[in-house]
Length: 391
Ligand code: SF4
Ligand code: SF4
Image (cartoon, rainbow, N blue to C red; front, side, top):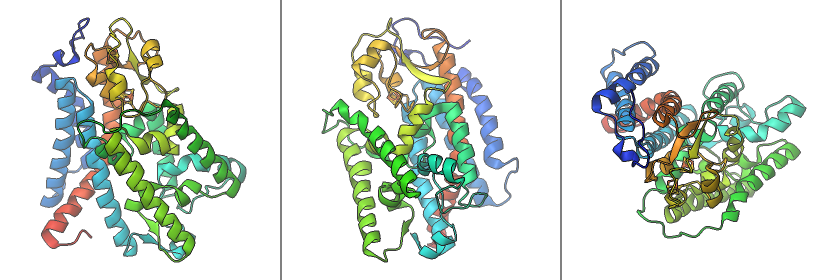
């Protein structure tokens, strides 16, 4: 049997023994082996090496999550690695397909534009009225498949809600990485009214996309254009757009996360993230605070990188629906009062089993979604070292 938190024990005191941790991690080892290898062990030594490194990387992290009882540091290691290797892989693909990161008008007209999940909130109303996806990407397949991103989004929303933003989003790891660089925040006091900003961004983006039938956030506000693909600067309008993208990237993804130790872009400016908060309401897993163990020390409130724990949520035992299920509050709580939870079950019962269920859903999603990208990114880096080129 899995050890339970004794009343008022520190979670770190509830470590699983190496043998039990191995046993609990075994299904993950088998699932990731099947998923990463596609049922076939490659004969090429370099591909075999990349597969072995990726496999070990995931499974050592998962084992450590179970063995130590801590979640966030191991999650972040995988999540940030994914974000960095996504950029390596994406840019290499762009250079292979087009010879540069910039996007020509011709490629836009031909719909050869990669689709990302940030566009989803902008497509829903126009799709209902026009029966068309207002994005110049391919619907059916290939590198720019819109259909596959919708399927992944629905699956992830059902399995983890806004956990997507801490376990699946290939951009979130950048924000997460910069928010961890300093030991202590230089800006501590942040007005709670900023929590309304993501809803305002979401509303503005959805309405303007419906009015102009174009993905307005992608055209004008997406900071991640800076590190993925952007339109070739051929007019004053595109120059202004490019300056906005780069400025927002520097401010929201680098500087403010660094100064505040909060995920500013993800928490305050991402329309997809705000919409994903709504799916937290229909998802099986959430994070809860047990009022009987809580001593109101507010460590969870200070540590939450997404502004999701307020005094009110400590009182009611429920973080806000912006919670990204990163596990930070669960890890820092000195009394084991904050925990991963399965809806419809009593908060204080079987907390370790509920944590394990959540970790299986979230970590498996992370491994499935990122496995191919991590392997490709690693292969590109090896190619760069051995041949001087990533493509
Ligand atoms: S409430 Fe807890 S799990 Fe949710 S985002 Fe904040 S720290 Fe992470
Ligand atoms: S960290 Fe949060 S949940 Fe844990 S005891 Fe302190 S206030 Fe309560």
